[in-house]
Length: 143
Ligand SMILES: CC(C)(COP(=O)(O)OP(=O)(O)OC[C@H]1O[C@@H](n2cnc3c(N)ncnc32)[C@H](O)[C@@H]1OP(=O)(O)O)[C@@H](O)C(=O)NCCC(=O)NCCS
View 1 (cartoon, protein in one colour):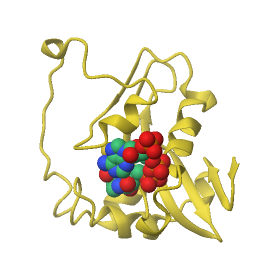
View 2 (spheres, rainbow, N blue to C red; view 1 turned 90 degrees about the horizontal axis):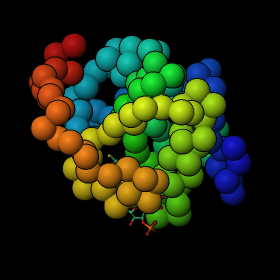
View 3 (cartoon, rainbow, N blue to C red; view 1 turned 135 degrees about the horizontal axis):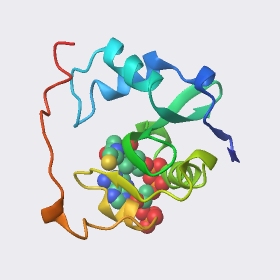
């Protein structure tokens, strides 16, 4: 998908693990994450990148069975490219991806971007008491 000077693609061969790691290791959700962990998660997920002049400037990673369930993670746009609708184009590309149609549940977690995802139909959990988790937010450290 082309949007102005930017390309959004699900081509795994275009992904730049070093660029993605450079952002994720300074993100609020996975500070200090290793390149190995970023690459391994990337390799086992459905990933979309945003590209500008040959460089990867944005990312979204979807953990999914491509049938019933998906979890959206690691969404970012580099600072120099923010504020021009790129994350919205990225989420549109995720939602229209052929492998992500007819899902029963699409989850995500966010600290402060609720109003971004609300524009795409994401809502607070309808029945939070039915959901459980094993949470280890520092699991990525030291790997
Ligand atoms: C969040 C982020 C991806 C937005 O990227 P962007 O390309 O600059 O955003 P867009 O230009 O597509 O606009 C996003 C829209 O969501 C809104 N929004 C809601 N929460 C936001 C947030 N935390 N940060 C940025 N925009 C936010 C914006 O106001 C804007 O609203 P609009 O449609 O009324 O204009 C980017 O700021 C980023 O990478 N932030 C750091 C990483 C992060 O927080 N990722 C999300 C983790 S869940």
